[in-house]
Every structure is written in C-alpha cells, then in structure tokens.
Length: 125
Image (cartoon, rainbow, N blue to C red):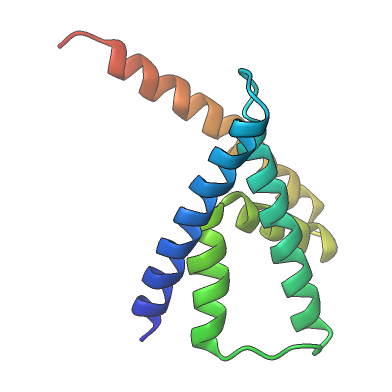
C-alpha cells in the first residue's frame, strides 16, 4: 500500500511541478529558472508547515498518508523540500555541523555531479 501511495503522490506532484513551472514561465520569460524557484520555495513552505502541524499535534496523518504527502506528492513536486526539512531538523536539534555538511554536499556536490555528468555526456567514446 505504501508503494502505491508514493507512486500516486509522485505522479500528482510531478504534474503539479511541471504545471507550476510552465505557468510561471508563461508569465515571466528569461533565462533565470523562476518557475523552479517558485516550485522549490513553495514545496519548502508546505513541507515545513505540515511538519510543524504534525509536531504540534494539530493534524494527524497515518503512515500511508505521510508517505503519500511527504515522499510522493511533495517528493514529486520537489525533492528540494525534503532537503530543506532535513537540514532544518538537523539545525533544530543542534546538529549544526551535520546541517552544514548536508548543505555543502547536496548543493556543492550536486553542482559538481551535474558538471561531471555534463562533461561525460560531452566526451566522445
């Protein structure tokens, strides 16, 4: 059941990400990825709000619904929201070195990985 919840949520989240990105780019053209910035910031705000509601016992979600919303829907919408929540929770629990490492590895490492993959894609066999 969990796999189905993640799959359905992921499909909905991916379509929502594409829709928001396309809508923003329809209204604002240019090279800067404004649509993805809107997606990532919105995803971070939503995951933070829901995590806060859960932590304050203002809402209750069964494990399947948590997987659907957090892993599926928000994960399909943007994995950046999960990165943001993970980093926030590390910092909140005074694991500041781990939070900084997470940022450095995810952002810095991600950019290096994109560059390496790009270079491999350009390389002739």
